[in-house]
Image 1 (cartoon, one colour):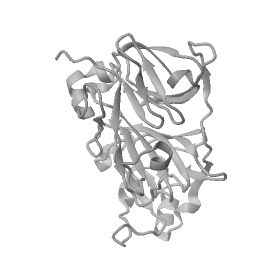
Image 2 (cartoon, helix red, strand yellow):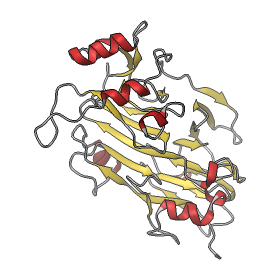
Image 3 (tube, helix red, strand yellow):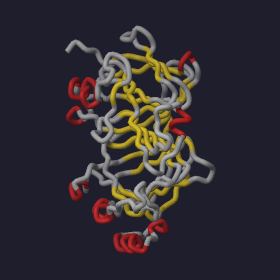
Image 4 (cartoon, helix red, strand yellow):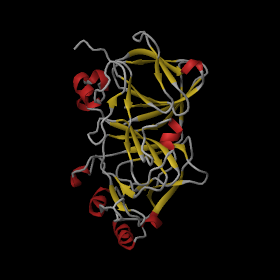
Length: 329
């Protein structure tokens, strides 16, 4: 082919869900975002929202096309079948989302859905904001089913504080809802299967109640899962003095770390996994012998570093301090 893989930026795929807000546009300078934007799919090879490369030698190429062309060189040898295994998005909940559940790997075949385990990293939330994650102790199928019929599901949900800088792991099979005021960086399996069980008695754009998926949800809920709690970051060593590295979430599907950079941090893309960087507060630079000049990652944008890219370093633009979220499998 003769083409050499380099770091990639993508054009965001926006979703104008009725509960969306305006912070994705205002906070990250997204003039192309809709007035009410619920989600921005940042890095995705899912057909319901395919990422397309923005700039560089692969400008205009869909991510799925690059995965097919380059396979493990792009995705990494740890990705099954060379397919892109995760979907990274921003979520702006001006209003609360529906109470919902996603299937997991063990039960997705029952409903012909796609398994979806995810995590939420809270970028912003007002004081006192909460999300719903899991059911209260003792809630089983009969109690939950009765509550769905009576419209009292909210009384069974476990409330968790939505604290900026904290994260919450949401395994497939867990009943959950992101509530109003939360701006979230989400990492998930590549899936778009959601089963709603309660929608707060609101109506859609057509003036009618949105569809619920109670039967599918009952098949997908993992009743063994208990209430969830905010994750506790695990300190890890960084290569450069002065840099701080924390593991935020680790699962069989993805790992997310948070870096506080005060100096360039050396890294090696050795073929095991791609890496996705998101710089929430300031621009990032990626430098490598393979690049003629530093690769710029604007604040609030997501960058994919191919698995086979080789040695490089990442740092705040112009030597400035920076916070960086990093996703691998």
